[in-house]
Structure formats: structure tokens, C-alpha cells
Image (cartoon, rainbow, N blue to C red; front, side):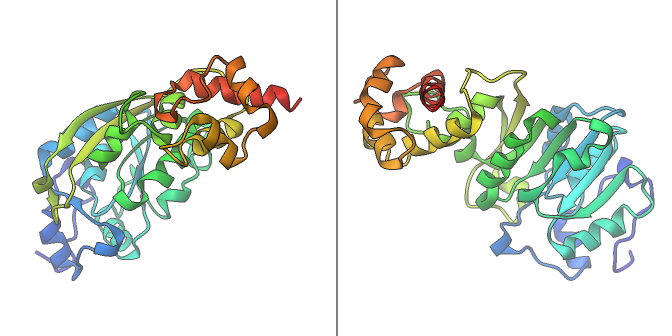
Length: 293
């Protein structure tokens, strides 16, 4: 074996060595500060690729391509794959592995700033996959949702705690900003959980794979998506307070007419934000927009 672990151009149909072997061969170690935990369980990787349901006509964007283990499986579907990685050391490994493979384009970029319209040439909607760094999951997810009209579907690995929040319903402890915002714009389900031992090194938290399918239309009419976002963030800024007080403190609604506004949209001003359904937040947002006209 060569020190750089060079592979043939048919790598898309092969299985790569373990993350431990590849890192050692390239003189690298997982960067703890970057939250690097590499999936090494082949069966799990196969399930993730299968859940994305990519076909030869698809464009797949992979966020956090790492050492290419999922990349190779995505490429084996015949889809065009753009493998995005911000760690320059890993970019070099990916370029080495997929050198000459026309199905895979390696890109050094930050997953938080991925521009789907720019990647989806000629207006193509994209499929998205990836094992997200857990400390960056929220900004990456919000960026993805903001570009939902360019996204066909996404299958991503997240911290189980985040997955629980994404699918949470009103009246539960996990229901909050992420639940409301994500479910407003997409259908989300937990595909399966992943044991810590499936990663190298094993993370200290549980993990889940979620599938996200953007809705053709929002769950409810918010009037304005930016106002809706401000309302939801403001509402959950102080979870123990009432919806009246959280909106008052956040300044997203006129204080002098807040009670009448909430009653007009059939919400109790003394209700806690975690009890309000997504349609309720949409009614608040729509009422604010209408009051500003």
C-alpha cells in the first residue's frame, strides 16, 4: 500500500479503508475542535445512501465529505456528486481519492455558507446529504431551509437531541424554534438512530439520521417569512414567560395592541410559547404584517 492510499478511478464502486487506516496513512488525526467523527460502519453508510434515493439524473451535494466514505456510495448511484469539505487536509485526501472520477467534484467550502442555486446549474434542484458537525448543525440547517426552493430532499446525520427537536410537537419539552421553523417549511422524519460505535472516534452523544422533504407550500400562511422567523425566535427567547411577554420583550409586535392582536388570532395572551401550534405562530406573523400595511 502506498503511503498516500491512492485508489483507482473506479473508486465509486469500491469500499474505502477504515477512517483509522486512512487518517494514519495521511498522517492526520480527527480535529476535536471541528467536531470530526467519521462514520465507519459500512451498513450505516449504505442505509444513508439508500435513504437519499439518488439516481443517475440527480445532482447530490454532500456537506462535510470527510474521507469520502459516503461520497463513494453516493457516486455509485450514478448521480453527479459535489463533495464539500472545509478542512483543507481532508480536501487533499478527497482530491487524491477521486482524482479522475468525473462523477465527483471536490469543493473546499464552508457548509454553513453553501449556495445551492449556484451549485444547481441550469436551475437543477439538488439532493443533499451529510454528517453535520454537531456544534454547527443549527446554522447549517437554517441555511438549507432558506434555500428550500432549490432542494429536492436531504438526508443528514445530526445529534439525536437535534433530531428530537426537529420532529417535536407542541406541549413537549423539545418543541421550540427549530421545531416550528423546520416543520413550517419541510416534512421531517427520523429515518434511524446510529450507535456511537459506528463512528471514529465515537462521539459522546447519540446520533440520528433525518430525512427532510421541502413542502410545496408552507404548513400555514405566515404572511412574510422574515416576520414569521422574528416572531418564532422572539416567542421562544424566554421559554418560561407567556407569549404576550416574550413578544413584548422581543419587540416584534406593537406593545400597545399586543393583547388585541393575540385575541384576534384566537390565542390566549397568557399561553406559553411551547403550547402554541405552528399555525398559531403563522396567524401572529400574518396579523403583524397586515397591521403594518
